[in-house]
Length: 424
Image (cartoon, rainbow, N blue to C red; front, side, top):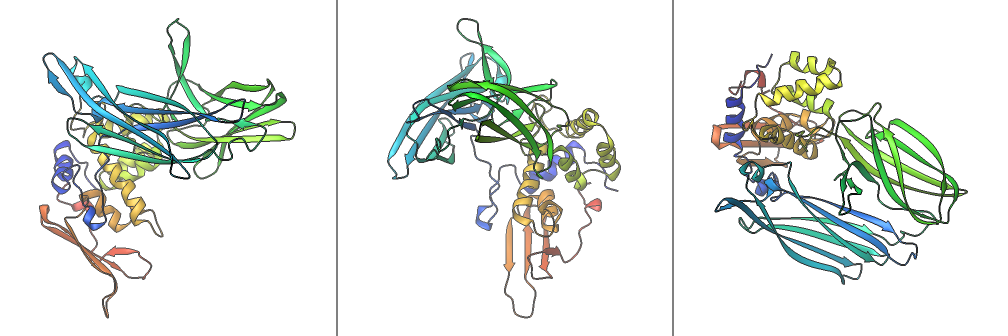
């Protein structure tokens, strides 16, 4: 049975074998995360005239993504945002660049994932396909990252009923006159508090008696919950709201499908949602899967105990496991947990075959040791099966993988017993 890694040993393992943030793109293994990291959402709202679409671009930049510099008694960070939209003829529809300045007197906020700078742009666009590029540049480090997205508004008004984007609402903020304004969450994220959550969406119709149905599926397409609400719809663009129970929803990703019907007219919209707690790694899509992926660094008894626990206790056991290994326990973010699951995700994307990538021999080695220093590939050697050699110069180790079947299932030529690894 593998012994649990203590904070020092797991830290040495990750730092010595990878050097967090090291890049190995020349071997087809790009592990460098985009820096500065940011989130964005594009919300499309119908207009009664049907000649254009209101498009809101919301960009969320966490404080810990930007480098702060102390000036007198204040910490200051500056970054630049660029937004470019081009239509199908590659003609600029939107082009904007601006600079944001962040200030705080608290050093703890400079590396906080709780604090965000939120930027919102609103445009009216003609129904047409668009390509969007968003860039964020840290003006101190000069590091930049970009996101690209296709926005197809060509058939936005194809049906008599048009539904805009689904917004997940968990709280409201007071406006200038004290009235509470709904604050949508980013990326469909839901906290794990409360018995219900609210959604809102704008709907354009000719009005009349009809219904709204919500259906929630897991990512395996299994129906988890659904309900139909009868309504009298007003003509024009109206903001609709629904409250949805959290029954049977655990720490996982789901697909929320919304269907509106008035007479014979039907329209639908969908959104990926995820229930998570604050501090849960963005690399985790499903808590049960994340627990199974601990097999390389946790004992069978620890994993079995987590799997048998109820949701609340399961979450606590998982948090306690990673809290004991957190190199920065005074911050919300756990860098080692994030790195572990980032590697597991990479393994799934690159080594999957007859089984999930993280379960493969290549996946196991990659998760434990990170990207190799060098890779020697032999896909077409005479009288030998395809094989690869991964070299880890930092720890003076190498691993030989052979494709015995010819179907890309590379196995270690000498089985590696991770339970007896020097890192344990």
